[in-house]
Image 1 (spheres, rainbow over the protein chains, first blue to last red):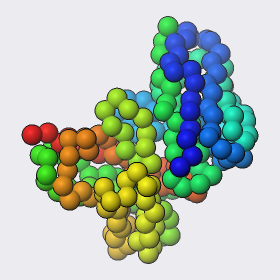
Image 2 (image 1 turned 90 degrees about the horizontal axis):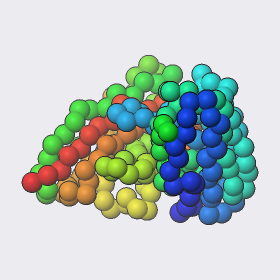
Image 3 (image 1 turned 180 degrees about the horizontal axis):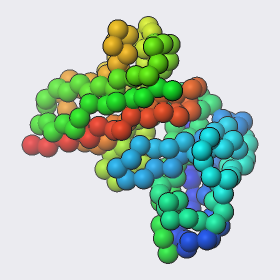
Length: 107
Length: 117
């Protein structure tokens, strides 16, 4: 299985901040990398697919980049609704593994 | 767009069997996959496997092969996840989703499974 490792291990930020979350794959996955936002009691929500493509309906303050093994998700000007856990996921090869998740908390 | 509706929360004892469901609606086609994803308490998302509704083909994650059974009923556009003998470590929330490749755009609401004596 491809291992996905996210960093930092935890993250606290304030409203209006810019935050960056990193994700590393254990092997080259091209741009087969997706980002999900997950809030307690809710289903995960696709935010970014194909490493850098914003899912329909997701605010433009979300952006992402990367290819190969290293990827980043950036949230510009944090809003209250952005505080959640963020997961990266590779869909290069089955099983389509997730990173361990990063909980973005309010400072 | 496909809506996915999952069966309700379950409370079971260790050793009992269980089958939970995920029904797709809003699209008459059965030519799509359904994935199952686990979230154990306080933990992250884990890809369990996928099934193709049209022919019930199943691809398991190696970590879950032999631990659960994934199946599908084309006639009711429903996917299932079942256990023959539950363990306390099976406690968690189980989500179904509709993957495009591995990208999951549509999700069910989740089913909480609690296994406790």
